Length: 349
Image (cartoon, rainbow, N blue to C red; front, side, top):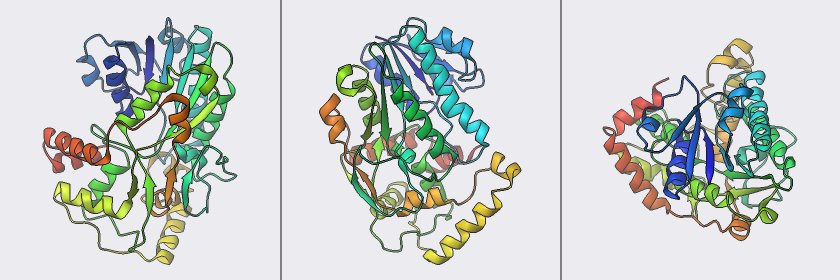
């Protein structure tokens, strides 16, 4: 097939490029003029289409002759204005999807997120499936706009143009410099990661990049009548004990796991204070908050996802185990100069 991939200069999009090429597809990537495309330039047979999700004309050029679109580009940070998030995550998705449909593309695979279903104030959620409703209150603009764009994509499904959304949780793996796992390692390395768990067992579903790629490629060729207009959770086979993972990462990278505990009441007060300060528009638009209710929820609330629907409807099965993925991660970190170089790359603006 002829496929277009967005977000290819980033983490998951780059792995999607590798996966699609390995399956023998003709691959075109949408890249901005400001993107770092050093790695992409070195990939034989890859076609570069320069454009932007805000530029409808460039999107029309990018989707010419394309059969499938894998849309992984998004604004995923916790700072920015409502307009920035809405333009990137909702209007940008709408422009790309409309251009793809008008050009005759047959499938639109949207990389969504379980964050689109995170309800403010909810407790642990184990074995959640696709019956989980959208929330009435969102943690932040990222959650809100991912939910809005997912609903829009699913509503656009029709005969001849199949839309599907995938919800991989906590994507991790090599070549990631900005996700939750590299941030954990960077904070541990700088002794700035507090113990938020306090001995409490927190179970979470994560998704290695290879597993997310496998799901996206399978969804691109599954029967339309099975997956059209539906969203699916995608995750690793393992349910991860977060404390065990933190200790394991410390062992692998020669670091000390966190010991400085923040009592829950103090943590709540700190989050409230930070979020109050970050209501100042000039600050919220430009700087990531050091602490947020969303980030705390991701690290202190048990959330696991049932992937039976993805297995049933398009044959999804994890292709890599967590332990093998961790070994792969260590090998990559060593290849770029070790953990200190890795941490510097994570902290680089």
